[in-house]
Image (cartoon, rainbow, N blue to C red; front, top):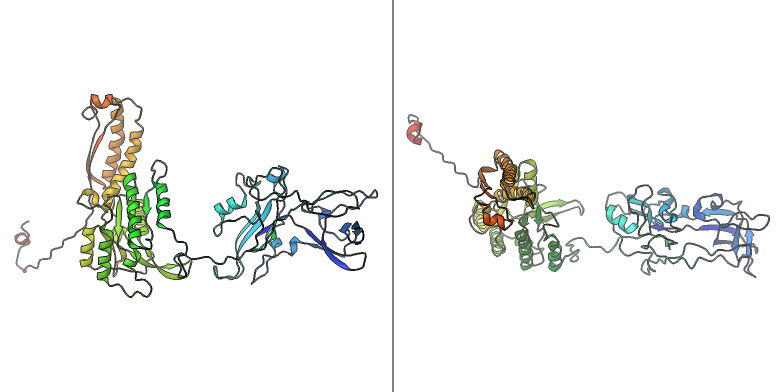
Length: 554
């Protein structure tokens, strides 16, 4: 990170003949009347260039009385041009990435100064991209003022914390290094200005101690602190479920709080709630699953995809190999106590896939893939088609399954509401089952039927809401039927319904209903059902036998 007001370093010869290097205040050439005019280094004019022909003043150069003595510098160096990114495997100068930071137009218009800073993210070792010194991100002319707006890309805010949060793919800004001294990283915010003075006999060029404005404040009348050039090394982080610890472990209470943010369907629109990985223990995984099921049951407008507990399918390190029979029993015991719901699905999958971020193969749960299959089915076909099978249920990016149940094992799982993932030679890996988590026989114990009703209910609910505060008379009821009937006829034409009936007239909108300010419509649907069982019968017949005799038909 580079942040701050850039100082000058000039090497000159003192009155005693020794060479010294000091921070200086740049002023204009001394006039014949001996009057000096103060000029900021960041203003980009000739006197800010450190030309060796300029007259500058060294504080206390003559030692005795501490007066400022005019000197002609022998060398002139721009401090910013000497600053590098502080890399180990390459040398990159900040000046090659961006001009020196100064004051943004927004802050300058509000009588502020020195708010700009640059930030770069570099793969120094090459561990991330394979290229040492590869610059991953470059963010220039960001601001320390919390209200700064870009002068070239309004209304984009450029306060560095907000900017990185929204636009950086690799980092967030946590603790503000300009808020206070950081002994761990060795940085101390310092003032960026100097006290005003006139005349060549100033006792000293001291920093402006009134400049104590920290970043994160509004721009008006602020002269912001700086820390200069600083390089931070990303060390000590943990990968998720790393072997050295819990990594970024989320406790069950935090997970429940997070999922609870999706409870209000009027505030947040959701199609799928995905369980993702389980928790540390089987009981915690079941608690997480049951809470998600309770959410979708309350919302009644989305589906939840619930997965298995990891150690029920994937053996822990050093724990030996789990047999298919043990895995089957583990799944039955895990899913049996979970709540019954037609708005949820259970699956048996953990897939072995490549983690390109950590360059290794890992097992991950497939409940997110089930949600993806339903979304893919709605995109490529219609929501009322089953997401299972070789047509629409293919599992992407799976090298193998942690558990590949046999037919007899699938026959034990399916009555327990568990859909299996299987790998079949020549067909690949796919979802073999489309049951919901409903615990009893019903039309809604199939995914395609539940999603058919979700689609229709959500569409017709919006049509019904348009009737609110209208008059409950024949005209309003006829308008509603004219909306519903074409929609359902279209769903029927697209194989979602076998038949339907819409009743919205005086028979269900009785005088009592009308007097209660209610509006009623009864919609009867015959959903199309997916094929779950196929029976093929092969019969060998003699050459001279007629098929009409064998089959009983002509």
